[in-house]
Length: 288
Image (tube, rainbow, N blue to C red; front, side, top):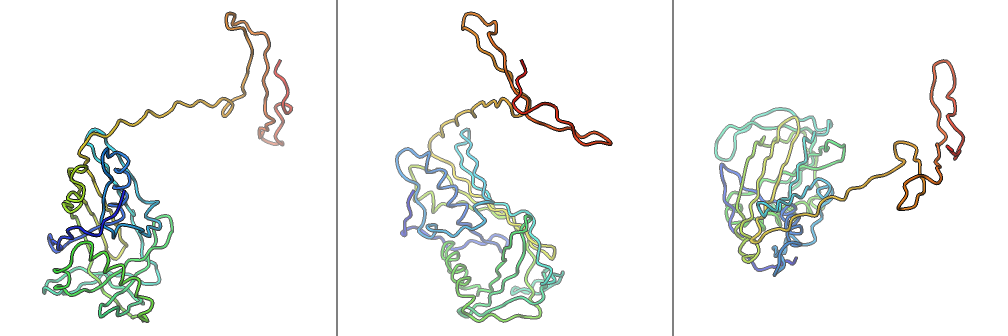
């Protein structure tokens, strides 16, 4: 697998006001697919190189389907919950297009001006208790319309990197739009980089964000141009002694009558009402 700086970074296309890209599942799917291509390496834009993935590696699942020649990388954060300290509440706002929107109001959020862009962060927790941050940035519409998908990812990374140095302040109230997103896009720019290896690449997103928390589901599906080898069957494994005592004996190959018989019972105890546990047998005591 390799990375290339020259590619067609397409302008953002908005469907119902939404556009999205996920580099982490794109990279995960490409790494998995790379082991199945026959002639060349899978190529991705340079922006996907040296990603700091953190807990997303733990959340990502890879599925390989030889029947459909697809490799799928999926991340599902499950339901994440806002920290109690920021007191998330239902709210409303009038957006830049003049439409009334459902919103979420937070108390005491850190907000900074990073290169003339307002940026705020809201802390939340994964369902296993690990900490996460949801970032919000208000970017001029004309900047978004002239941006490419990968340039948007780079811009978001730079805003996050510059947040601390921008001297963030705590605001008594920060209001952001609630979200219910269902979005899909074919990544023709990735197919163009891999014409001999990939027939199709697409991403799907389901994102929900309200006063109770947030959930993000991102998926990258790569369809290979050639068949994927069938996976090897899982090995059959048997472990003697993990559930019961083991008896063993020795015979000649032509005669299955036992010549000797031996075994062991581990020292055990069994609780009985009104008394202490009683040993069943001595350690390594022969059965016969």
